[in-house]
Length: 166
Image (cartoon, rainbow, N blue to C red):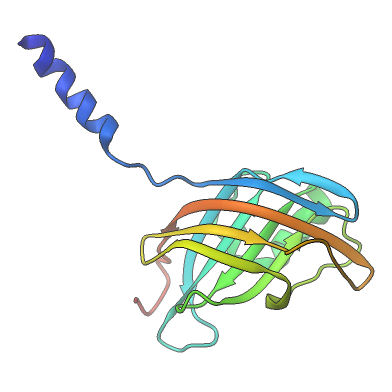
């Protein structure tokens, strides 16, 4: 009986679901492929719908901080300087893609548009975002080529500076 009493709390803790921060898949840019394994999602004030929150999702080849993930210019610099590979997507409160930017050191110019991403959500609420982002084949624009197919899941980190909440 004592053994059961000692083991029961451990079993209960093991059964508590953990929200994963993971991505699976790859991004190919100008013929060079990178595996993306990390996901981060951050709530930010919406730039298009006053009083609502957007969610910035970044899938990457390394762990990123909140400050890095929300700053598109910083991510572009990390791709150039540090070899970062990733995909930065902004989702509005209705789960529509507002922008998507693949990031890779092989790019000679950065491309960002909601037109070239396909989004198949499996979860999108105030706590979690999950699903699949893919490019629907190889895209070729502005003398750049890219493709990606990524599945991911991440808890949404609340923005402590945000003035509004959902």
